[in-house]
Image 1 (cartoon, rainbow, N blue to C red):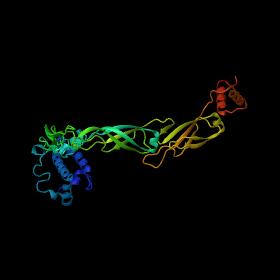
Image 2 (tube, rainbow, N blue to C red; image 1 turned 180 degrees about the horizontal axis):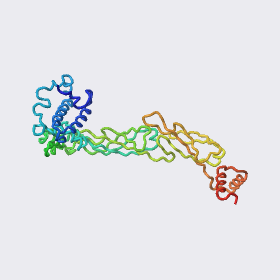
Image 3 (tube, rainbow, N blue to C red; image 1 turned 135 degrees about the vertical axis):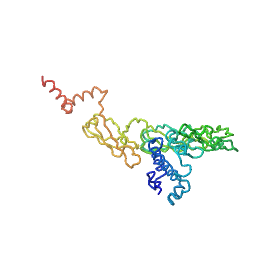
Image 4 (cartoon, helix red, strand yellow; image 1 turned 120 degrees about the vertical axis):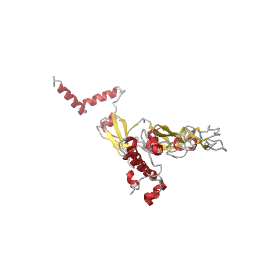
Length: 379
């Protein structure tokens, strides 16, 4: 009885095409005869998993197998049927490992066996650096950007051929976009050197785009910036990169954000810090003051009598919005007590009288008392 194809590949019957492909690649590398020269069963196992993959990767064949089992492929299409040998026996190494080598050495952008190799003709991704203010990061905004890029040629509608003509099938690869070359034991697939993977050649290229199907132009785009973005946030605009050649898909545009340094506020994650100077009198007697916030409204805080520099006040929910959340950070107000400068003679006299009236700086007095003790007491 033939072994179940799903069991051969080690996947379940509900496995996705990607799961099946990953399982096959792993097993193919493991059981490849060239890596198992002392194992006579490796070649047989290799052919079995290859046949199972050929069936399960094709939606129609997979549906037939799920319904009828291996009987749906009796008559020479199994792993031991005609043409089932390895290498000298007719086994096509290139067809089995073409996709594996492409993904290993070409970054997975070989076109995946699709006629015309459209994945190779995909436009490049673009990067755009955008600077915004802290207020814009706080409330979110819509920015307009102008990006130099390649766009689809309007004259030929991206085809690359003169209006009235059309691309012809490549005579070298016969429309596949890829050719095979024998290199010793291996058969390796490469992009066709005649059509550069397009599968088509153009006899009469478009005069506007010189057959590329795209032209250089500056695009104006709207970028939606959500509230709470941070320095270095990346926003992806799908399909807004460079147009592909000859009708290939466009790349993506990545907008990288930089939040400009603010004159009053300093951000730490979702929290915002602000240093507020107050007078010596306000710190001594206490006072109620208004401080700015990022939403443009003033918030009132009450400074207790005897407040010192560095004292912090926390305003809950007055910080930055947190992306993909309804929560907000907090705002911290740190006061700085200013020392009076440019005093008049009368002001100086009043301060001297104030000092004579009594001890008003317990922390300073305690500090100098300890210093005095350290260096010999009253001597």
